Length: 146
Length: 289
Image 1 (tube, rainbow over the protein chains, first blue to last red):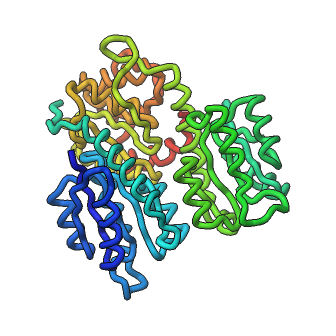
Image 2: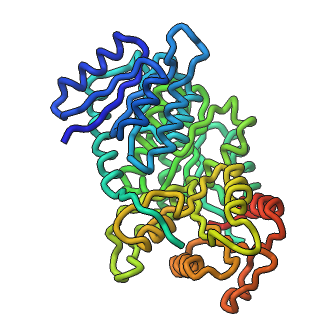
Image 3: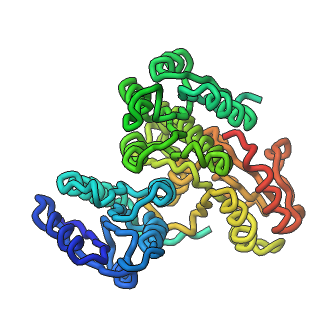
């Protein structure tokens, strides 16, 4: 079974790099790519995901852009249904965002680009995918009468 | 009243030890302090603690070193990492150390010393969360028992210390129950940074409805149970919570009777949704979980 992984990253170089690492991994992934917030939301809506790898600033020239945090919030909201696990990769992290991500949005990891290590990244994605699978295994959709 | 929880503070600075002790004791926690990881380890072997408050930068060591992590390592070594939860209060913790604390040692939160005075509420919230997690781990170590078979539960239970199970009827002649939930219970809980969980608002997990209710109760920090109209499902759920020793906040509309078995129980009686919300906001922070 291949895991569904979404990569949200506005910088084409980084996006290609992250996709590249996962393509050559021993684990099999269906990879979805988004270069902006709207595309990412659309994919979240269309597709049950196991792992979402998310950059925080999604418009490179806009220093105030934090749309990745909104995606984390949305993912956390739907996490109980499909078990999607989130990983942050950012060039502009700060401790406050890291706290919010770990504490409130329960991300698996928060990686700053300048300390990025491919081996560690692949391992984290693998662990996240297994966790998502485990969480989703239990879900059956029915309704509660009272 | 017993202390709300046992806390161990590790900090090499005596002023900070005193300050943290004062903040925590004022809020009802029992506090011991240590100035180095070795002393801290001795204290937690002497008497168990629920949470540790850890300064990462200890002594005159190089500031790039996070000496406080040694206590988390020791907790791991003693196989207590499921039973004791950490909160970091440190000066100059790098983003990398902060990540390490969350990812590797599963701390509940990290605070910067210079900012703590503006974040006392968040700090106490983190401590409460750590204590609830630890108490829950003690409970689960005894093993959950299945409500159907009485033998050990085989479901995967994942405790969420900010989740609150809500049991209530969905309709009543007395009041609009959806408003009680949305504007009363949910509004109060969200202001206190808790997430309500009403069984019908979730997809059903597993095969059996009661199995889910059981799981939801076990996974929540406490429950709010509206006994208005004596809905049989609600009373059954309340019974399950009693049986497992879980804290239940019982509420009811003022025009609804109390079942005879519950006449001696403490409960919140509400006349309006607004008064319910205010009573919950006042009462919940003082709950002993």
